Amino acid sequence: MDVQSSNMKKPLRVMKFGGTSLGDPTCIRKVVEIVCDAARDSRLIVVVSAMSGVTNRLIEAAKHSEAGNRDAVRAIFENLRERHNAVVSTLIHSIPRRNRINRELKEIQEEGERLCQGTTCLRELTSRANDSISSLGERLSAPLVAAALAECGVDAEAISAMELVVTDSSHGCADPLMEHTRERCASRLLPLLRRGVVPVITGFIGATLAGVLTTLGRGGSDYSATILGEALEADEVVIWTDVNGLMTADPRSVPDATTIAEISHREAAELAHFGAKVLHPKSLRPVTRCAIPLSIRNTFAPERPGTRVTPTGPSKDGVKGLTAMSDVALVTVSGLGMIGAPEVLSHTFATTAAVRAGLLLISQSSSQNDICLVIPSSAAERLVQALRGEFAHDPAHEKAMHITFDPNVAMITVVGKHMRGSDAVGRTFAALDRKNINIVAIAQGSSESNISFVVPKMDAKAALNAVHQEFDLGAPHSRTIPVGSVAVSPAAWQYEPAQRTANAD
Ligand code: ADP
Ligand code: ASP
Ligand code: MG
Image (cartoon, rainbow, N blue to C red; front, side, top):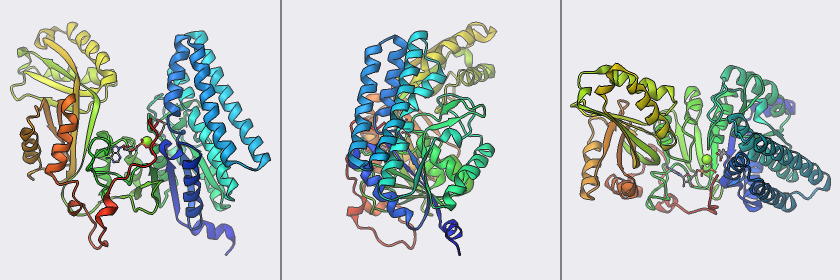
């Protein structure tokens, strides 16, 4: 068998490294070790985020440009140059390679500065320009990681996902057009994989059919990885990050949180949708469609097994994890006249859809006096204005007399399998009651896999810890260990804070 055919027999793995794995030259060295090791027995597609903190800085630069703060923009680009140059000087030793990468990085940085200058001239930040500026971090990190891999003898090629991921034109939250994406991936990537080359692809980015750059939303590199996994029918997608896997809760809020050994696509999707930052909210969609297993592993502890996300997960029912979202607002439409007026409901939902305020929770009192909606805080004012406008022009407006919003709330979600009819609801609320935590609104998903409730923002952490303790999620014996798997020592479940930089993005 020739080399190319034997390459194509190896399993195909998409490996995504987040910003937390690309914080500095030491972190990038770890990434290179993981890729070198995996490249021995797999065909690999590497997807990279921007170095940690870079996307936040770029978004700040975009805002400063719009406000005309040229000095602030200059300072941000200077800092980005220093950070990327430090990686080049530490990891890239070959002079021709170093010259080439320096040239490439310079061109991308200059393009970014020109985009910011254009924004300053117009004093307008369009969603298109915002996407172009915020995507620069991935465009810088992909050639950098490819060059670092080449230094270690891996045949790697940096590729912009603009060539591969075809999206709709929803700037800032684009979705893939899979037919086109599949075709592009096959024609561009399969020949490289056949030759044993490792493509290093920019996460977060796509382009419309007309070639206009789009982004997939904050944290979108996870989504990029699973989109590419689906497009290429990969054998596995691995999300490399700074914790030991998908955990029973965010370890920053629940110190007791432990790694989940295995979980179903469905449950992981619920955790991601309701705020587990380790996975982009939409990232499970592509792998669920194709039943592709996904793993979440720690770049700084690659010997750990991490979490396996499989189509059905282990057979165990019950609560698996908790999430909290504090960047939300509770919008209430209320009034005695709402009783028996279904048009108030339909107008409320139509308006919510029209202003694209992503609904996270809906709850209506049985007296029908009010309806509560939980939405991201960024959409709260927009929705309240739109609802007030909608009802002011509607003959039914007197029926919905008060439209208010409360930004001081958090939404907590309990995720598990087959929870309807179990004691999960009773135990959750009993645990909150014992801590005197007031519940503002409640919703149970008909899917039986989630229960969400709203609490005052200041009580969110106490609520999370109370429910986590109630379901014994921190204790090793309650872990969902797959049937037939070997016993795992309690130490393997502990959370070890990795070399985490202050601002992950
Ligand atoms: P990356 O840069 O690798 O994309 P992120 O910062 O986006 O990393 O996501 C990893 C972080 O997600 C972790 O450091 C952790 O604090 C946070 N997180 C929130 N919820 C969870 C959870 N349920 N399991 C694991 N990590 C979580
Ligand atoms: N760099 C992008 C962000 O910070 C995408 C990602 O990290 O996944 O949102
Ligand atoms: Mg992330």
